[in-house]
Image (tube, rainbow, N blue to C red):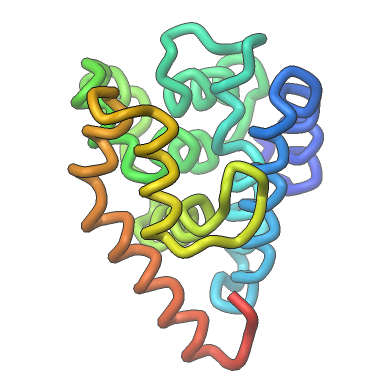
Amino acid sequence: MNADAAWAREVAHDLLANPLPRRWAHTQGVARKAQDLASILGDQANLLEAAAWLHDIGYSPAIALTGFHPLDGARYLRDVAGADDVLCRLVAGHSCADIEARERGFAEALSSEFPSADAFLNRALIYCDMTTTPDGEPVEVAQRLAEIRKRYGPAHVVTRFTRLAEPHLVGAVQDIREKANSAGPRSI
């Protein structure tokens, strides 16, 4: 069972770098954010970084089966890569995937196969994902949500999902930022 960040980086690179270079750039930025949170994560820092590297592998054409990337990525990690259960659950549930799963008709599959992981780690992964642009640069959560909605358009399921999930996403970013700031000066 693997949840090592170095291993996760290799897996993500192999699945994303060539077919989806922009997604790979985003993933690298998300992983940098996870590394910045190490001081508030203690012994869970490596696990969060591994989840950050792997959170979007379900977009890879090599493993995308359902078209719902959190589920496709988590299934690949569980069934092919033999990854740690908690890591699979973090990937499956990243950035309020349960809300998007309801919109897409995957709620039962997601919740039965991958029950929610640790709430703090989930919120930390939301922070990393929702404060990183598609090009891997830092961004405020409001701008990230606006960019997602513009990219997908007003009638798309992802736009509907972001509107439903916005309070949870914004709240998680604020919560993690406060915890990180109270732990000492940093540049998150």
